[in-house]
Length: 214
Image (cartoon, rainbow, N blue to C red; front, side, top):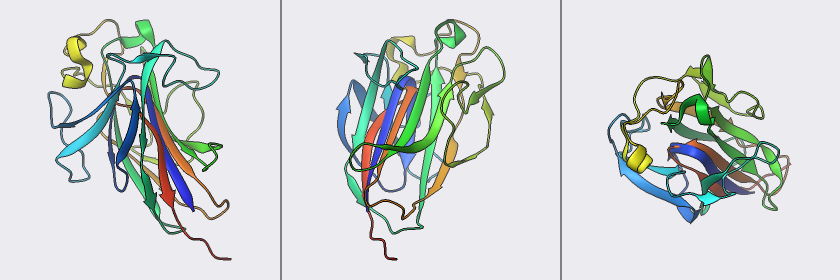
């Protein structure tokens, strides 16, 4: 079974994954250790991958029908998993824009031919209430822990470049690390995981190769 992970952002998002390495990036992606208001991820890794709109590409990192201005996208290499294995990811959404410019981020699971299986994570800037899952964005097929997350203070982070430490409007800050867990199914031969966030980082297709038996 082939899987792809796609992470995208029209903001900035940080990601810690259990099995995927970055392969290609559109826009700005990178790797950071604990930095400013973004600590090391709960996975135990000392570093995490990120995608950011700081220096992003016009039209990149968007959900069809939602739109945006600019963003970044990261696609991982192929990785292996058995049917029923859990896919564990950690996300942290960071925005200095606030609700004045409502950023969003997402991670999406795709088939090998780039057909969408569903979303593993979404976040969207809001002036009040929860930032994750993202308001008005597609429902997640994964289980998030915590299930909902409001924004918390703190925008000091190198991934925001010159906007680090700033706050344009109500709703700026970060979500803290959020765990996303999805059990790999065996309903189709090829899968792709795609993530697109608008805060710390954005990932595009990550591939997983698994074997299914009836």
